[in-house]
Amino acid sequence: MALNHKIESRMKKIMAAGLAGGLIVGVAATGIFTTVTGNTKEKEYQDKITSLEKELKNAQKEEEETGTDLEVMAQTSAQQLSEQGDAWQMVLVNESHPLDASYVPELAELEPDRQVDVRILEDAQQMLADARNAGLNPYVCSAYRNYDYQRSVFNDTMVDWITQGYTPLDAYDETKKSVAVPGTSEHATGLALDITSADYAQLDDAQADTAEAKWFAENCWKYGFILRYPPEKSDVTGIIYEPWHYRYVGKEAAKEITESGLTLEEYLEQSGVK
Ligand SMILES: [Zn+2]
Image (cartoon, rainbow, N blue to C red; front, top):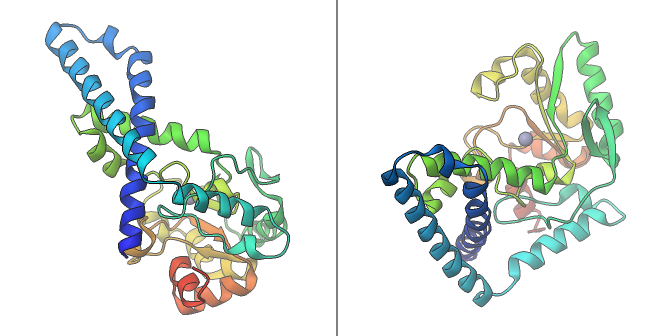
């Protein structure tokens, strides 16, 4: 627990440093200055940038002082995902278990413009085909997402919060409730799918009431997938209930995890892997 907390606060510093760095460029580049009229506003933005720069410098200094354990962890995960054998199926990626930004799986197209790790293609195709044969209308709204894309989504959301008056660290906390911190998104593994009903594309709790969500929640384990962020487990996963997000873990583990009602975090801890 103490270690987790240490990792989290360190992660926060790294991200705040990186994002604040990006933000300074971002704020200048998006022309907020030119659209702001009046000196008061302009001074406000300049003050904000000065304070961001100060935070960035402090965070970078601390980052240099605290070593490289998270980077090692991120590289180990990338290594495990690349290896032969079945260990790749169980690689944990979450806020305290980042994945190296340079990792790119061998990709295959599942649906138009939707790619997955080639090793899960057949099972994912079968799952979608069986859902469609059951008369359902599933839509894969997201599959593999690379680090840069995740970073830009996160950065944009964080800018929104900052322009609403949040400090960078508060904006960071607010943003990560709905967007995975870059380097901690399971979508970068190529093993995660967001599936909604084609008739109801909203990513909210009501998605769980669609016939598609019900079918996938009940049947996904047969194809090696688990509902990764179940309700009532946000404190374990760090992610809100997502009745659309499925993660491939292999058929055996998917069956055990689904039957036990555990999250991937809890399952790995129980089996002594993590
Ligand atoms: Zn997702």
